Length: 176
Image (tube, rainbow, N blue to C red; front, side, top):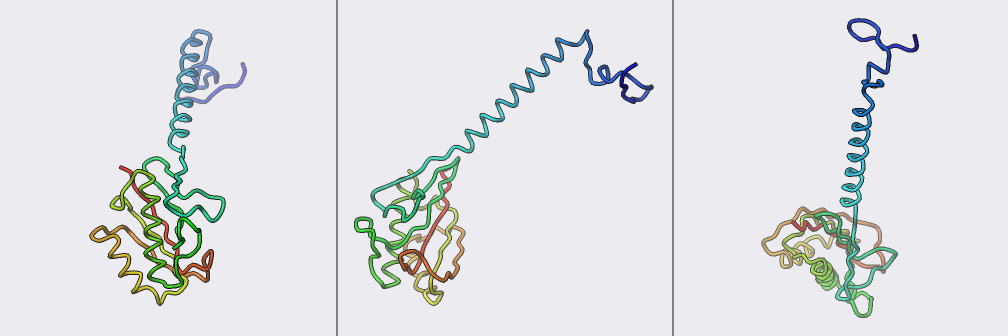
């Protein structure tokens, strides 16, 4: 007798144990079609979820490297790190920290607006400082920019930033 499955009530041929038999072929074909259809739906949903759209604007400096100014994915927009660069020249606006901080936040605003969002939709901000002694100046500029809105925030000191900038800011925006 071929292979058998041990089920309560004694051994049963494995084909009968999983519901396969000559009398059960239409039901088995139906199950396989449903499984294939479900797998296709899951794959399509994953592709739709994972689709991302780059966001670019001339109102903010072009990316310094091979990346987008921002990427929209699902309900979120991920804004790449912005520096205090002049959008027209691509050079730092000033060696002064406060001036760079204001320009960096303005560049951030322009990318967020290009994504069809507002500053109030920013949910998280990461700030990289080349010198943590600028923290209190940063807080003053940051408070004036965001006013009453308070997204989550992290501030860290780094050893260096591109173009010898004094700070870099990136954020996450929720479009819903």
